[in-house]
Image (cartoon, rainbow, N blue to C red):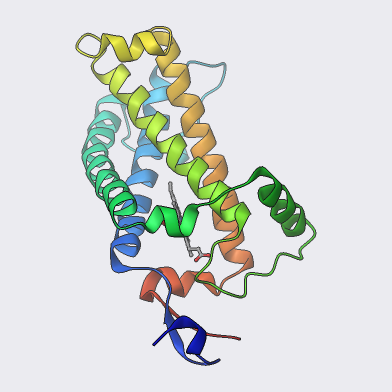
Length: 209
Ligand code: HEM
C-alpha cells in the first residue's frame, strides 16, 4: 500500500534487515575495538593520561592486540557490506541526504530546547542525518589511520598522507574520540526517544498519525 494511504495504528517498515543486522554487529565490533584500543594505548600513551584498566579489554598488550585484530575483521567486513548496501540500494540517498547546514542548525537548536518532534520514525531529522554521516566519516578515518599504523611500510603513502607514523596514531586517536563522543550523544538520544529502539530491532513501528 502507498505510504500516504496508510492510517494511524498500521505497521510501517522503518529499517531494512540489512541495516539492522549491520548496526548490531557494528555495535559489538566497535565496543570490542574501542575497549581493546584503550588497552593498546595504555602500553604507549600518545597523550599524558591512561585509560582506567576497568574500561579496557585484553588484560595486557598482546591480549588487547588479539581482541583488536579479531574485531577489526568483523568491523571492516560488516562496514564494507553496510557501505555497499547503503550506496547501491539508495538507502544513504533516501535516509541521510540531503543535509543542509541551516536544517542541521535548526534541528540541533530545537533538540536542545527539547522541542524536536520525531513523529515519523521513517524519516531522520537533520540532526540525526548530520550525526550519522559524521559517524560514518569518523569510522572511515579510523580504518584508514588504523591501516597506516598496522602496515606503515606497505602503506607508507597512507601514513605520509597523515604526516608520518606518529601523526597517524594521533589521527587514529582523534577519530576514536569523535566516534565515542557521537555515539554517547546517539545513545542518549535513543534513551530520550525510546520509541526508536524497537524499530532498530524489529524493523517496524505503528503509525501515530
Ligand atoms: C547500545 C548502543 C546503541 C544503541 C542502543 C543504538 C540505537 C540506534 C537506533 C534506535 C537507531 C535508529 C534511530 C531512529 O530510527 O531514529 C540507530 C541508528 C544508527 N546507529 Fe545506533 N545505536 C547504538 C550504537 C551505535 C554505534 C556504536 C554506532 C556506530 C559506531 C551506531 C551507528 C548508527 C548509525 C550509523 C545509525 C543509522 C543507520 C542507518 O539508517 O543507516 N550506533 N541506532
